[in-house]
Image 1 (cartoon, helix red, strand yellow):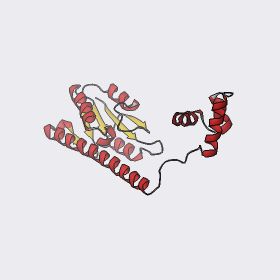
Image 2 (cartoon, rainbow, N blue to C red):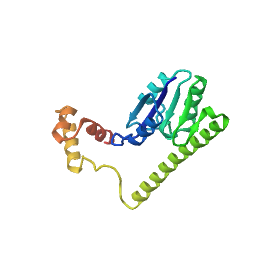
Image 3 (cartoon, rainbow, N blue to C red):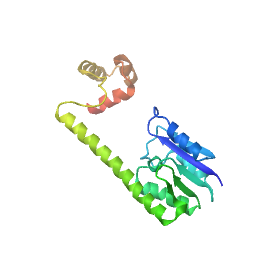
Image 4 (cartoon, rainbow, N blue to C red):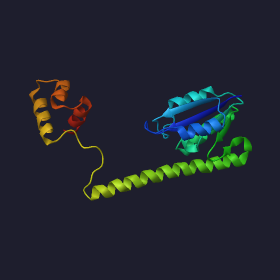
Length: 186
């Protein structure tokens, strides 16, 4: 009977130190970590490995429920699968232990729903902020690498038909991906 842990951070520049410490305290036998992977994705490389590794009698541990997923339906499906396979589930932060009976499962459902609501609210606030900035004439995102002068040059080079797209990208100092994005807007 193994204790398998799973940790996740959404961006590559975040670290899992806090989660790792909690996993060490929980005495996990094997830890799987996804770096720079969104919780909105149902399939994540290390999560998939961890879930495949679990056998009847094992315990699957996450630091916090939102590390398992941001979608209530997906989280509950994963946990139902674990239960069906005879695997115990624990979330350290919320102190959810499904071996505790129906109350643990009820709390899990409620917390998963709140995690999804929190994410949806965050997205809503971000969109509202971007819309407000746009209404004031500010636009977010990276500055464009293609100014009016480069755009004119690109159009002329394309019209001449004398150069490949790779050559045009090189001549104008942009990537081929950027060139293709520019072309798609013409």
